[in-house]
Length: 241
Image (tube, rainbow, N blue to C red):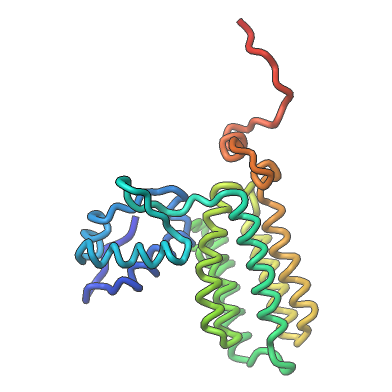
């Protein structure tokens, strides 16, 4: 699940960040149990330190605790899906709107282009974990390039939540398509065309949201299983005897 750490024992915030990264890479699934002792052994820390890390993640809406059962990765509901993507739309378009008239500095554009190159390499290698992490982290990187570390932290958590949502509800959405949409956003930013960048960001988030199964967004409790087993909704028929 998580590789052992090297060197000094990690702090609770570092453990929390490693868990979020594992979620972004889709290495931790929605509803997966996070055993305190197992994590303590992996990180070489006490269960108290692990418990503090998990409590922080619970406050950030990434994990949840069940009495007498332990800690689990959040299993988002369809309502969570709607709210999370709506929040990202407001935050990410607002982030671009807040950019100065002169736009991003040249170094920021270079960093974003380097990130795009990493996405393309991961896609070409069919490295699913690295690809998933990079596609999600693009939005965090954009906030960092805009010089807003607080929004970067918020987007990191929101992106982790939407990764869990996609794992549960999203139909096949080509990674190459997401990468191309990221490239469109960066091209608009490089040109100083903030209105187009906002339009491209909205279109990108709308595209991702559209690939959430309609039955899932409507609250179909069988949506994930229905898609996995390739069942399309059909009128109810009585069982044959």
